[in-house]
Image 1 (tube, rainbow, N blue to C red):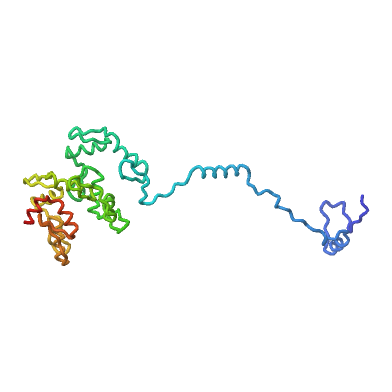
Image 2 (cartoon, one colour):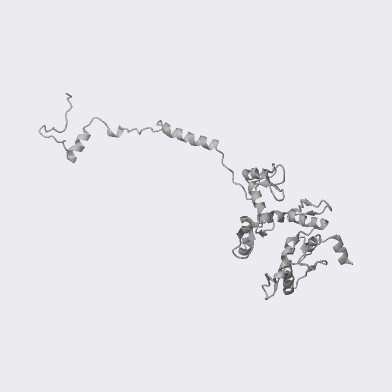
Length: 311
């Protein structure tokens, strides 16, 4: 045993820890051989402790990183981006599957019409074509009596009643009911006229305008009235003519109560209210609000007709 004496005595009969009063505690601390002020408590050094995550977390993070590297992010496509181009024609597409479907139109056309021998690359196109021969028009407008062979044509027609024009020109902000109308309209800004007449080399922005122009050379008038012997080169001319027999006048003036069979007549009437200038065809007396429209219309008349009315 050590000879060091304690400033208090233990009570062997007591089981609890000994207690000191404040005076005795101060005296006992003063008698200790150690200088408490010289004792320095070293703080633990945490820098040597590894901050790395457990191995299982590290493996998980590496897996996520590898997945990001292997799967490239898809770039968002702009509204007018059409990166897939057809090698056989000038058509372009936003999606590759649209291009693949389009390419079938250039391949061998295995579906043949039994009536007119027209050929098609897809069976659905042949089925739609057959409705021309049967006269079937299963899709009816709920607003007017019009009927259509295709549902898509009905949907486009309904925009006439709703006034919806979801497609807009990026240059002049003119809006259209159909997407194809925007494509044709853009040629006004670019000056492009991709359709050329093989007889007189006249060029046109629309395929339909070229088709109508070709009838001037052939003299063909495929649209015949079912009531009288009149025939017409253009379908809309036949529609306007039929209104003479039915007495229908679908074009009404929003200023007065006047009604008209043809839209051009309504335009002429509105010019009376506004005091504007009109341009009249010297052959058929059709009236146009713009001289450029009249010039385009004059191409539908044969040279003989023009010569006759000039005399």
